[in-house]
Length: 137
Image: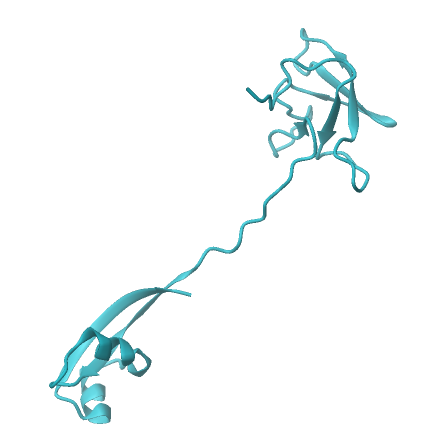
């Protein structure tokens, strides 16, 4: 089982903290220098001239709202793409009495009107339907 926390950490292990500076291209930026399991923050890490303490679960000793900030190596983040947004289109559309098909209705989506009277006046059709659909943008 792969370890993500520090129950089995040892002095000398190299680690990464996103709360501390890391040189470009490196995957670790600190070394565990002390472990005191009788302490609330038992993991002591040396980051060059700076020392910091962490919990076994990799939480920073301050009230740091980010959760786990200590890792075995630099995490690789996959940035998700924006999810598709849903848009509701609704309105009245005229349908040819000869061919009242869904294809004809969908083809008319660019000609949606607020009232049935507008459809009858502008499109000169007898049959009018109200549609409401949800599409992805």
